[in-house]
Amino acid sequence: MTYTLGKRSRDRLAGVHPDLVKVVERAIEITTVDFAVLEGVRAPERQRILVDSGASQTLNSRHIPGRDGFAKAVDLGAWVDGQVDWSWPLYHKIAKAVKTAAQELGVPIEWGGDWRTFKDGPHFQLPKKEYP
Image (cartoon, rainbow, N blue to C red; front, side, top):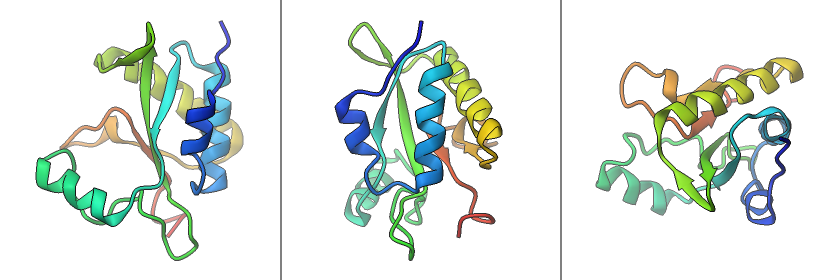
């Protein structure tokens, strides 16, 4: 089955770095698990709320647009039966599609599920080294 991004997901990619948008657009074509873009650009005020609630550990989020005006992170949610499903095995499948898409396009990518601490399955970002 082939999936496509809905209007809400496409809208949530506005302001995200074009390289990351290309990766997400390719990943939805090859994924075995449908997904939605939950969040792209994030305001500093929202990031503060997420840190205060324990949902994030940094105020220096890649979701906050950088000097170039682009956010360099997206959160993707597994879309099952019309709602987001937080089951970890689904995020491994989405990550496989995102990593494959990134490799095909020559775009480096980091997945929050690969982090040693504070694993974040929905989170994908462009590395700071290549995308300051």
